[in-house]
Image (cartoon, rainbow, N blue to C red; front, side):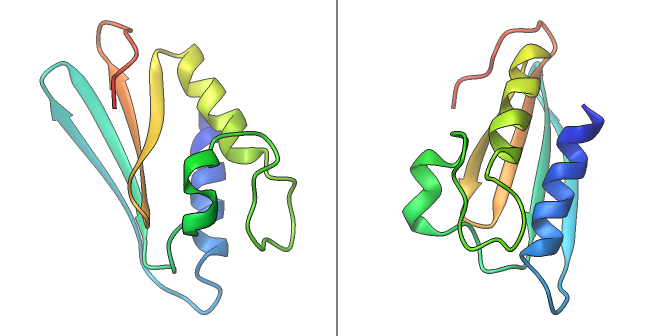
Length: 104
């Protein structure tokens, strides 16, 4: 799980090379625990939004193979959670207290 957060934070920092704000918010709703990772970068390009969690999907990064979000999603699924995109500039992690995958 630590690697998931390291990856999400690194992605946010790479999206803001001249600085910006990174917000990580936690919330609880019904039986779900949610974590939102949001930054003030340009957002996830529209061209890759539908394939964001597939292997080798990337957009203009200097380093990396485009595996970070795919591996992060797999890790979350294995721990009873999931990840999705609610806004172009934010990713949401959801965990079900009963270990069922959330529905987007």
